Length: 304
Image (cartoon, rainbow, N blue to C red; front, top):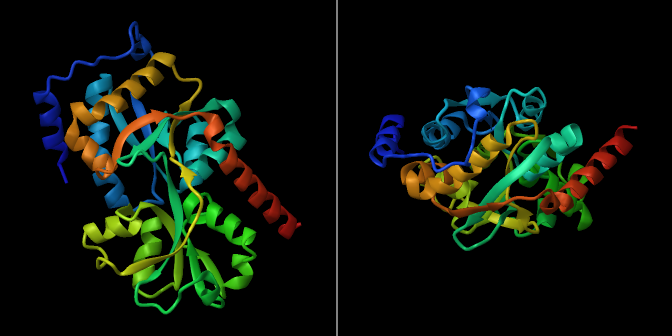
């Protein structure tokens, strides 16, 4: 993993001169840019992955860029509402929550396109590779872990689509818990604390389990996919509508230039599986919004 010093040295060596939006004068009013990161992620991993990108953006934008860490996914929405965060990568369900809370104040900007040209990922249910379970039906009476109540792949999509298949997780499993994050779920699964967990996977080569195996945190091949959701649109990098347009434009230009201008930062931040960024539109997430709204309506009906 590149160090902060090596990334900055590489940026200096490449003589970065920001090719940014013409006539940008936002630096007169914006002296620092804050990139929101949820601590629902593994903290050390999130910092190691994101810090080189933050250092690159500081160089590229010409103002300091720093982390703003929040307690969970919903915390990103609250931080954006309070104008404490300028940019963040929102999971689709978190984006849906953000639109419910902030309306048009929350704007999607760009999203990942992977090395196969896919603009999305999947929710998967993982079991231990040696377990006897071959279907969700086999897991009746077992213990399941979701990641976070505002996670798309770690809660909303599996909860919604399992019900569509006639399986209510609250009835089917003997217990359902929230682990606090995707890494937590998979690590606990391998340790035998849960029988099945909901997490995400882009393809057979890239996902939470594959990343943890590459880092030596779990044995390679120690998990197995039991169920896969429909495609989830890639998580949008989002911003506040009340920021200067020049800053938003410059952020998009900088992110699109990172692969060529700062390849070490790009590799660190994307794990090497992203080929480019594509524009993200609110309309891309209407299906996810519909899923989260139905789940919220079901929750209110049960509690009422």
